[in-house]
View 1 (cartoon, rainbow, N blue to C red):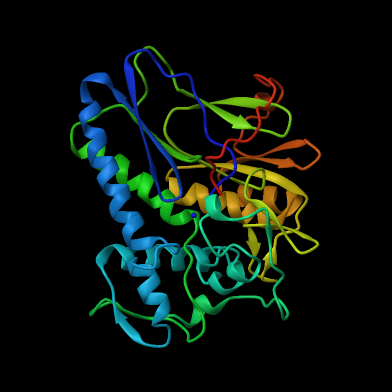
View 2 (view 1 turned 60 degrees about the vertical axis):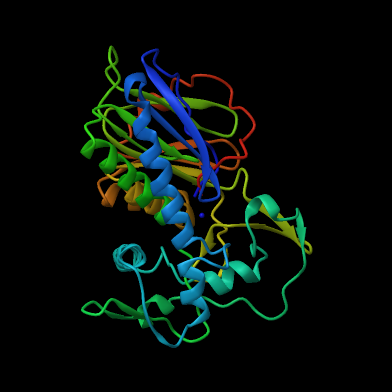
Length: 328
């Protein structure tokens, strides 16, 4: 499921960290030390979401729905909520975010968890095809039933992980936690601000350097190709597909980091801007009244929307090699 560099920060002394694997990445939870017990609820939430929404698990509810494409299927409230959110994102982006790219992502070789994906995969026969079949999904809101177009399937990608981060923060807040950060492999959101600080210092990666973003509220997500790439025959491949072609996006970008009020929206914004490329992507972020930074493969960075250009003028350190835990 998005991302290609983890968000990093210096952990304040009065916060404790809980780390666990879920949804194809590493999830980190920062909480006041006396409330670290609340991390168990976050772990349970991510386990539930992964069991329902992973396309790599044959026993997941999502996989069962995909196997029954063409039939009317009753689904759980969780799957229904994520699907409705994904379809709303598809409509809002004119299909530049598309949850029905399962056939296309498998065709380019991403047919298993990235940790199990070889660096060289077999070539795919036939021609690539654009998508857009999300428009043909039938939803019965009264009976909570879904009919996917025959021959197509769902791959929610990073939006599901972003929604899980948002849900985890809501759960922590409902339990009385006032300060927290939940980071799912680069998709992160914050609650409150650590004692003694004005903001969370979030490291934003570039090709050869990084920058520190002071995040007081909301969420950050990064989409890029630093980690999730492989070769298919003679072609370089990555996981960020352009729905207009059904092929990995060719935009000249290395990554896009977006800031929004919710993690799910930041994740979609980063991915859409990456697909659009530097000029159109920066313009789209501005039109959405969001903030972002677009980094080209040659290392050039560009602020977009409400992103303070001064941050890019003061890199904090040389960029480190991309972690295995990423946001995409």
